[in-house]
Image (cartoon, rainbow, N blue to C red; front, side):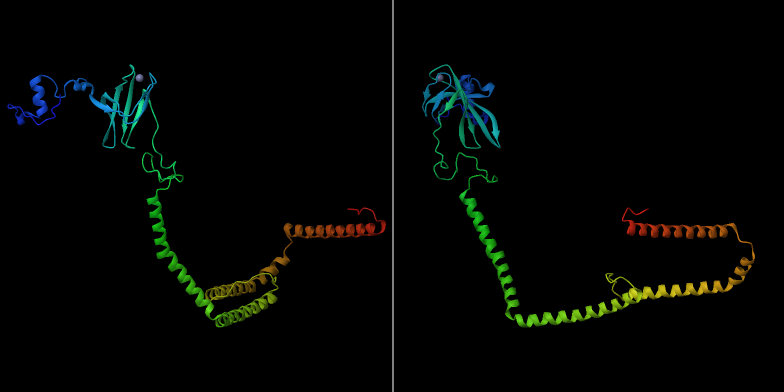
Length: 309
Ligand SMILES: [Zn+2]
């Protein structure tokens, strides 16, 4: 039997260990007595009181809450640092065993096997309240029941955002809008003046462009690039280059006539003869084509039949 009182035997020596150990040593048994007989399997026999009504699965009898059993208590795991205990009890009405475990996550007991729990838990959610105990509250899920405190916090954040961000922004926008709408006449005057100036520049540009297009016979739909200093410089350089080239060619041509005169005296080469014959053939072909077209036109207008191709 466990020592419940504060009796210390006269020969008790605290340096030799606890009081329980000293008692065990003296009697040759474990200090916890018969309850410790399965301690080598990790089982301690304790008194366990049913926390709820159950039905035994073996004899199907109803066993009321508060009935006590000598249960085999065993640590079977841990939820974080909290141990999970299993209590294995033998039904007092039959030979069946049932097992109940602690559930630290939800702070409750769970019937694991051998019996069925009578569900008598008050569900506040079902009765128009908020789920606080006995239900896993998952605020991450969209369909999770709304925690009133979370809702309140959200509301506070929203109102803070409204006061510190939204309202000042709206006010600044309003003041800008008021500034613009205060004197529409003068603003319009300014805008139109600006437009007129731009229009004048645009028109003068278009006139210059049209002049260039007229001079070089360019299509009117062609849009010309805008002039700038760099482009003018570039064009000038190109023009100078072209001029120099022309000058060079001119000089070469001045040297050539003598050579050309020599060529004329010589016998025509076969290549030049071929060019002549080619041109003859070409004129013949074009003549033929013209005659054919004319005859076709005539026959079409008089006979009304199919044009001869
Ligand atoms: Zn039973």
